[in-house]
Structure formats: structure tokens, C-alpha cells
Amino acid sequence: MIPTWSDWKRYPQPGRGGNIEAPISPGIYEVRYAQTGALYGFEAVDNLAVALAQLPVKSRAGSWFGRRAVQPFPELEYRICATTSRAHARTAADRMVNRRSTWIAGAA
Image (cartoon, rainbow, N blue to C red; front, top):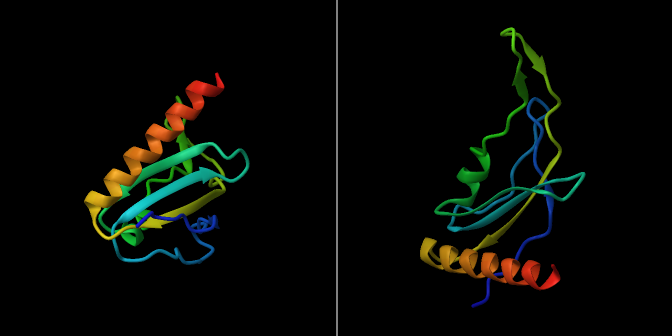
């Protein structure tokens, strides 16, 4: 079975509520910045819902003087690709990374 990606969904903003829509099963997630499409995170995991919920997102930046300047939370989007096991997720992720690397090398 060839795994397929879900549609892109907005990552919930802290303090505003919202839910992450992901199964409690193994798979791959990809998170990107909504404005630029730049990759934020990509990983094969045992539990998609938990991994996305625990995604480390920095909303503050430190300064030289110990004060913290509040930075806006980045607008993120995520998509998932559910698989039957973590081994299948790792295999599919490796193939996707190899395909992407091959495409980038050919485009350069």
C-alpha cells in the first residue's frame, strides 16, 4: 500500500483553542511555515496525534539582558501520512527524503 498525504491544515495557535486532527497511529508528519512553505519539521513517529501535540514551537526569544521579547507564534501548517507500523513509516519517510534529494540535485 502506498501511503498518501492528507490535505494541509492550520496548526492550532496557543491560547485560541483548536484541535489537531491526526490518528493515534504510526505515520509521518510534515510541518511547514504557512507564509513561506519552508520546512519546520518532518518525522516518522509511533503516534501522530501525540507527536504533533508535543511539537516544540518557540513563541519567545531571549535577549542579551535577560528580558524576553514576546515573538508572535509562527503560522504553521501540517499534514500527515498514516501507516500501519513505525517500520513502514520510516521506510516511506526514507523514500520521500531520497526522492526529494534526487529531485533537488536534478534541478540544480
